[in-house]
Image (cartoon, rainbow over all chains, first blue to last red; front, side):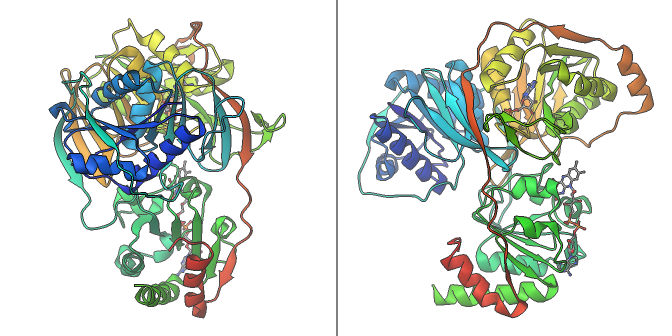
Length: 323
Length: 247
Ligand SMILES: Cc1cc2nc3c(=O)[nH]c(=O)nc-3n(C[C@H](O)[C@H](O)[C@H](O)COP(=O)(O)OP(=O)(O)OC[C@H]3O[C@@H](n4cnc5c(N)ncnc54)[C@H](O)[C@@H]3O)c2cc1C
Ligand SMILES: Nc1ncnc2c1ncn2[C@@H]1O[C@H](COP(=O)(O)O)[C@@H](O)[C@H]1O
């Protein structure tokens, strides 16, 4: 099946999750006997576009219209639809992230295509097209069969390791026919310095066990030794010890890092709902009965004020040895 | 201006997740259903705030679901919704739900259609965008702030590593998440008023689902936590590197 992959463009450069996504699209194409076209919207130079071939794109369609200088769901989705029609794509793939989820939902409805939002594996194509996704906030999986002719799949970032070759893609300028964007940007506020939480592979998180905002230095030290982002439990954000965007759980952010280190967090079910899908969970808590230990891969029963500095030292020593 | 809030029913977060019929159905035994938290705390409450501020006129509620979802609609009315509509069909797939809501909303002149950022059972986060496609309007996903002045909507939304504030014209579909409003609980007056508010039942259009759930799987149980003592931090780091392969 011919596969179209939407490639998020960050002012001419691409993120790791995008390379992973192109790998995924190429594998789906290979398994179903088709090839992979990537669509890039907005400014990017040809060399960078051709290099997307390293990750499995055979062809790159590029529309640099100024309408794509900022994200608007409708404009971007209409461009994806135009590219899908041009290439005859039967499978359309995006990331399961803020832009990808929006585009996937829009394109699927417009093309009358079945959608699996949040895939965690390759589709099984014997006797149909069935994709596994997480459900119930990471507590279970559902295998979903798409019955329509065109299929839309969004992939959870960090599911597969990135593979690279030295193949190049052919780059073709493509007029999507989209020239207006209804969304106007007034202001952009990026959290500076720190690793953004949503895309972090490593996360260090603190709860009420830290006792107060003045004690966050030991959490930050571990995070910076690891190169990790910071997160926290809800009461911590509610008490303004930490900013609200760091709050994870049912009412906060949902994250899927490779490593989640929970410091002084009890592991209430509403907290777990946001972090359950982490690949590896380390829990540091002085109470051996804390529920979080049941969800953990590794644990330390002890005082965060003693353990965190020791763990930070061990991480630094490890990093120095593996530099 | 008129606002439509899309309300999904979801199992309470503390529900035991289990499956029956050879792992093809969610086991509803003993499960309590709630309004999907993002729909209630953010989409609905923000709509009510806009009404109270005089910016919006009526706030309508819609759900796609069978008679079992009337309890959550009563609660949404008790919080302050003016009219509730239940489209009488099982909510099985994004396409089906979005098409039903769009068919209902089409000629009713809603300026804003609000959804939650995702349902806590299926975690798709995509229905709002599908509704927008079916209505051929703009969509803004994952909004943390929402203000309206005339037909201009100012919306702050999540982007990677921060937030962006955009403006867009009505009509527009917006998905809502934390930051937008504070959760409320219904008061006695609201509960009494909700008893007499209309809960309209609408028959579905013939749209069919485009996906089917082949099976469910529970997460393989964690093999048990491996504990380290305070003086074994080097060994913990080694395990994260060699066994878990995450650093
Ligand atoms: C509807 C609803 C939605 C919710 N949504 C969320 C959500 O999105 N996110 C969220 O996080 N919570 C959420 N909650 C709250 C949740 O139920 C818990 O109350 C909360 O997660 C507890 O936070 P905590 O673990 O930081 O604090 P506590 O429960 O107070 O736990 C503190 C932990 O620290 C340990 N500790 C104390 N001192 C030390 C020390 N010196 N060294 C080591 N360990 C120590 C204690 O043993 C304890 O386990 C929600 C609740 C409800 C009802
Ligand atoms: N059956 C339904 N009826 C009405 N609204 C729904 C229904 N299912 C989902 N929604 C809305 O769509 C949002 C996103 O759901 P989802 O795309 O399934 O994660 C929810 O937060 C609701 O606002």
